[in-house]
Length: 322
Ligand SMILES: Nc1ncnc2c1ncn2[C@@H]1O[C@H](COP(=O)(O)OP(=O)(O)OP(=O)(O)O)[C@@H](O)[C@H]1O
Image (cartoon, rainbow, N blue to C red; front, side):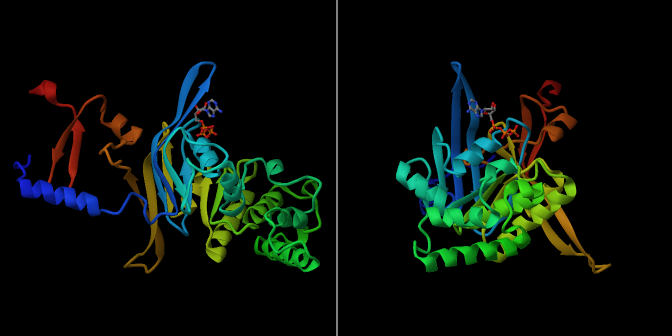
């Protein structure tokens, strides 16, 4: 395929590799060959099997995947609630594998905010919305213990509830609000500590489609107005279709990505969204082909590869025809 490289070629390649920036050097979230193995009743389950993922600052993106593909495992690691077995995971410069218990607590208070699927898990039932939003700031010792500090926290809580269009719920307890209102207050709670990253695991799972749309709009507001990076795990195709980037996880690895961009139609002048699917190539050169592609061409076990000037062709195994 290629001629034998000279010594100078090899030295050039080594130098180029050495000078290449480290994987994920400019990303806010870096997962590098992340592994998480669970052992239950003596049986090992590999929930994450060398997952690579980069998320840049300011992104709003969705993670999708079949049940059991590893989405919640990944979210728990990113939230600082679980520790990976191997690999590397960094969020906003913090190393999630080597963090001490004290640093982990600070990480959960200062770096990440979390919204769970179960509305009841996000809010304390005996506190009003305003008190729920003020609590994380109080626990983090923000704005001090003085009366001025209390007033500043109440003011920040009011601003956040207003931003998320639930200012009218400020004095209500969770059972006095709809599921959608509770989730919007939950987003305000998650934003109270000014996190760099907002993580949400199926935040619209318990809601009807109209309310789910409103919740998604609330995430977009947080992303656009506060600049918070947002990662949402979802089964909801409508939500996944609303973001610029959707990453699919399969068998504990990132498999494909859909990127969407707006394009103005040259004839009609109308703006339309163009989506394109990509496969993830890891640093060992491994590629997961979408199951529907391989199934359509009956590909399995072995495929034929050809290097073309501008692409690599992958064809069904034709060796038995020769
Ligand atoms: N604490 C645990 N102990 C043992 N196995 C676990 C544990 N947590 C997750 N697993 C297993 O790891 C795999 C990935 O689970 P995970 O919950 O991350 O999937 P998921 O993509 O979030 O699924 P779903 O969409 O159903 O929530 C599954 O096989 C699951 O059974």
